[in-house]
Amino acid sequence: MNFKRFKYREKSKAKVEVILFAVEYNLRKYVHKKYRNVKACNFMNWPLIKF
Image (cartoon, rainbow, N blue to C red; front, side, top):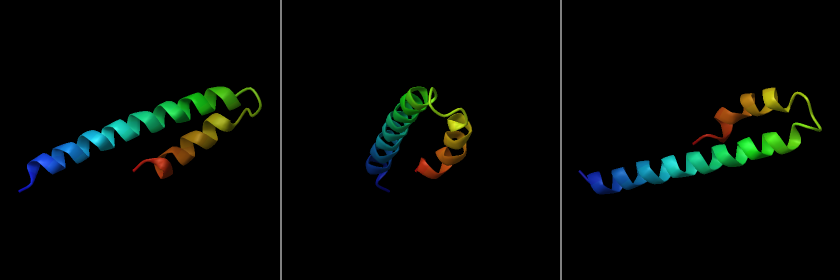
C-alpha cells in the first residue's frame, strides 16, 4: 500500500488545518469589535470549513 503518499497527505492536511485555524482566529479577533455574536457564528461555521 502506498504508505508514503498517505503519510504526505495527512501531513499536508494537518498543515492546511493549522493555516485555516490561524486565519479564522485572526478574522474573529479582527471582526469581534464590530459584531458581538461573531464568536458563536464562527464556532458554528467552523466544522463546515474543516476538511
